[in-house]
Length: 157
Image (cartoon, rainbow, N blue to C red; front, side, top):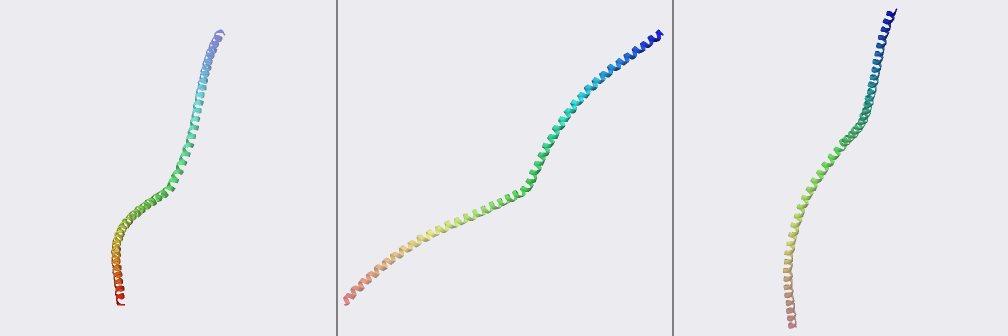
């Protein structure tokens, strides 16, 4: 029996060594599993944080996109009005240039007419002076004739 007992003890000892070895291995695997799980949880937390940041960025981008689309729509709505206003301004500017040119011609014509009128007034003054001189001479002749007539009438009486 002893050899069987010794063999059984040896087998038991081997089985216990295997069991201890398996337990040690299991504990090591469990520790590795816990480390991996902890690492995976940290990575998951990091990914969740990144996801939250990306979602926040996506909301900002969506808000910016919405704002830009609104601006684009406003630009599309306002651009024809601005184009129309710019065209109106160009037409008004052209009309102003045409009016300026017309006024410049009118000013030139007015200056020429004023110059002609000044020349005409000068001629009229000369004519008037000549007529006043003729009138004075005629008045003198009439006065002389009237005196002679008076003298002759007195002599005849």
